[in-house]
Image (cartoon, rainbow, N blue to C red; front, side, top):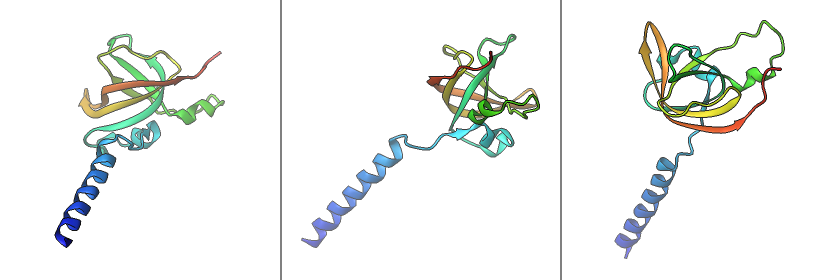
Length: 127
């Protein structure tokens, strides 16, 4: 009887662990969290930011800033722009996005290559 209880307990613990592991409830990082040292982040991560602009040279690249930068009203804000490459439809300026992917080294710097992009909400920025 003890053998069956041990096996049943192990199965329940395995199911609970699998649920939390594959549920995707991991916390997204901010642009300020990763922007100062992108080389420190290996593997797949999720980053949240506000779309600040798009590249005129490459239609698959846009830039995001930290959400806290929306609160900065002085002209000398030190904003970190995180370039993101995504092959799908790009967000518009002011969209808050969650991008999942990894950093890649490109042209002497780092670029975030997004496999997934989700628009969370839109913020009115600018005048």
